[in-house]
Length: 199
Image (cartoon, rainbow, N blue to C red):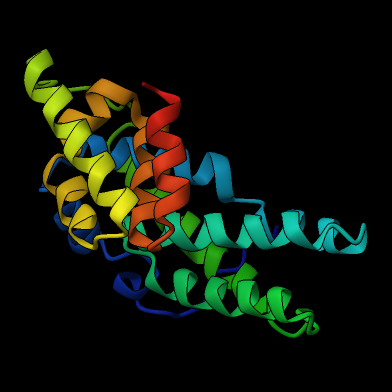
């Protein structure tokens, strides 16, 4: 992946305020999710290219879909928007070659911003005040969320955001990230699968 970073304004590469808003201001959780993002998605364009070359269109589309949801969650809106175009092109069976270089550039920029942010924090992500979890309240929360997801109710997005610290502590950051990214992409079926996998 190229190390080139264009002159795109930093906030367009990674809107930290928006990402924090989605997580109710939980900075430690946000930093954990940023670290997971670069681990899971830094090479997404290369993977999409390889999968398409192998005629594995469904897997390539899933890779773009996952990138889209995760980018939206952390506030990387330009990556999100370009990933939408790539995903739609794959689904339509059209050539994605003109779209991938731009997605790669935007993803590079977002990852460079994340690397800088993590470096500022010493790349040491402390759990910092994991909330106490009442088992009965957690069960009620998950049951409510499952019902909303099954009904395709957009209120699930608000509930996932409002309950970010509790859900991340109960499910683990990777599962929470998968759940949150899927709900923000209105992919309620995948979100439900991620949630039920942990129950």
